[in-house]
Image 1: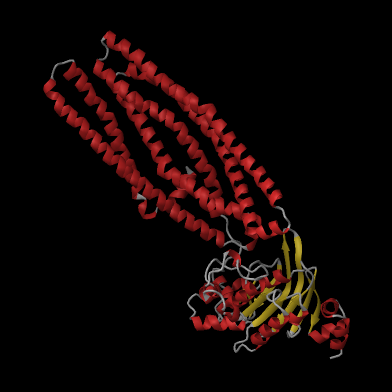
Image 2: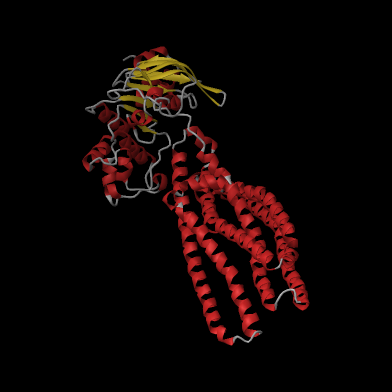
Length: 581
């Protein structure tokens, strides 16, 4: 019931349809109960009593009941359908909002395929429940209750004989529900695993082909597909252990009705017409027993899926805006790291980081892979919060800023460039969708993207494929840089932004960035010395600590990591000459 109550929060303005559905179900059940009484009169009074003048009105009454029943049934079905669509519309929207509001750590712990399954397959199971299962269960219960009352009114002994198997059916239904819930949970989990395998292979298809691992991935998919089949078969076997028993119990009712009813008619306890009522309404008792097993099966599938949806709904991003954000006149771009340390999963990522970046200055970060450069920069827009110490922007702890205001002042390019399946213009304008085309083109010119974009088949309206398919690595990086520059951020974080472009293009981009009229505080993370040699300050990170800092000349004179990297990239002869500058 908690799952149903949770899902109903999205019924919104359509909630009245739930009560309308119950009301219309009462009407349809009432009509089902009424029709056998018409047949009783036809049998007892017309056929056996000879009152043939009443036949036509009774037949018209029967047709009228059927017509009203069909109309009420149609409106009832539409009502439940509209209610279910309103619920899943709100549910899917809210779940998507909760997912994209999560911190990056959330997506390291939850596979993309599993999240996709939750927003699609699990939500569709919820729609099926509210559209068919819940109204079906309500109708079956009301029909069984109404039949019980009528039978007891007509003849209590006859009714008790028919209801002797009801406790058996109820016990079987409860056992079925208890067994099916974990079975459907296993099916749901394996479906998520299967979705993850498909998602990973589609996103990593180039790697798969580059290493000729098609057979390996096909075998892996086959194994998971077989596990999914086994989970489905296990659930179906559980269902088949109980469903035939429920149906057998319901069929026994027909036999009991025939034997008991026949004996009572012969004994004169009930009329043939009354037996006709019992025979007709035995269906109203049989059908709920048969269908309740299916409804319980589908309900347990809904509860298993709903548990996963509720997990996402109540999962909260630990990084939130403060209740009373700091009041500022706008971010200017001064950055300070004060004794910053960061642990993730018990592992030290950063240790005692202290640095000052003046407003409008450019600093570079270099170091071995995994030394913490990207994580360090991600602390500024609060993609993670420090374990100890503080990150300040304009002298204010970033944890005191409104998140939207803080991140809106930061422009970023990522190591793994992501472009949406949309026109190039829309990708560049992603952070400033209302920007005029002139500004978009200017940002592209600064990033040296305008030339190749203009040469595309439809220029800026050319649609790039998912993740930028159709563009080279260097082209994607330049579009990403243009996207970061367009909102005119106060802080610019460039993470390995020009690693895929040639040296001449890199120099041109650096020159244009230095010539920008409104210079942002810029953090450049790079492996190339050429990308950061002109920075006002350069920091070397190793094992999460700053081991060197200074200008290009100072670090060259220090002959540490920076110097060795320069020699590897430029050659000893050029390194020696440059060191003498």
